[in-house]
Length: 442
Image (cartoon, rainbow, N blue to C red; front, top):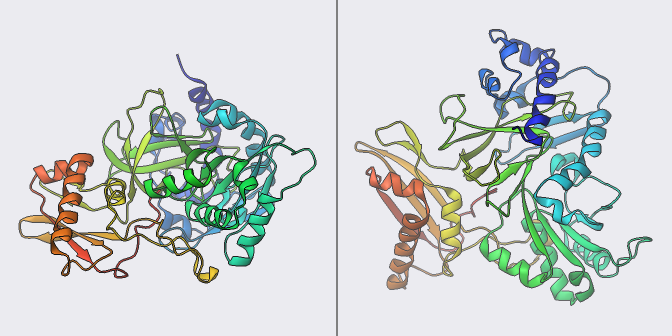
């Protein structure tokens, strides 16, 4: 028996393919594909995977159906500009579906009336921005500088809105922004504003254990939701509290494909590929779009497509140890290991434009991973920033180095498998300020 989500995809995917086939960008790429076989989720893998670079450079990825009403511009983590357009009918389709989404997925527990404060901007973050509905008015705030941060704190602590008396608050935004806001609320002693926060929704970044503990202290009554989103994709997903894997919202279909081909995987690690469905994406639909993220096919208990994120493809170490290209280490596993070690340097949470700002090291660990090719095959060079000189405190440095390797061996199946296959790893401890923090870690 099919699920409601499978029925939803089966209903909208054929129309999605028919509409996209009218766009020159896809007409060229699909010239040798029998589109009649590509209108099912199984047949979708007959179509080629498209990359961010192809989309960014495309001059013919547009269906002329009237003037766009929204322009989205993003540079992502690769600093490559990408412009997307949305039409009125697309936005209306998403708005009509939004309440239904909240009622049918893991976020249903949070669908009661509330006031949403978001640091996300529609023209930059698109699908990561909450949709205004009858149960959730949306208010934009900013933490970009000290003045705007003070305005946001005062608004939260002295909030008055007709019909919203007694409603809980949802804080919605990047982990970094919410950390800044939490610190500012604590500094002011804004207990009323903090006490009304019942939900924190994180977008555009992974929440470390260190930051989670801080935010739980700042907002003791709040529940947390970790989302997955890309500015250029019409909708995203969320981390399920039951299976602890990511699920996607209805307007997108997800696949994990091979590292070096476009075939769908039923297990293992590969590239995360998304397809936007019509009518939620019409002017510039993304069909089998390579997100730039690596993921593992999930084996959850929820009976639907699920995945576990590994990290950005441009940052995750990949090498051939004799049986083809494989992931050598999960950046998310590395993050979790480093986050447990007090001696590891972490990124600051303040923005450059915010003056002295917070200065608390609540960001991601400062580290980098490099694959070094040798005559005997690839090896790993792991550089980690620490808060003291390894030469002045050699015993502590060696303990930190050992804890990192032991932690990876215990928690990262990719690192464990690669080590068993002969991978050698060298850990270098670096002085404070020498390394940048791990970026984006979705």
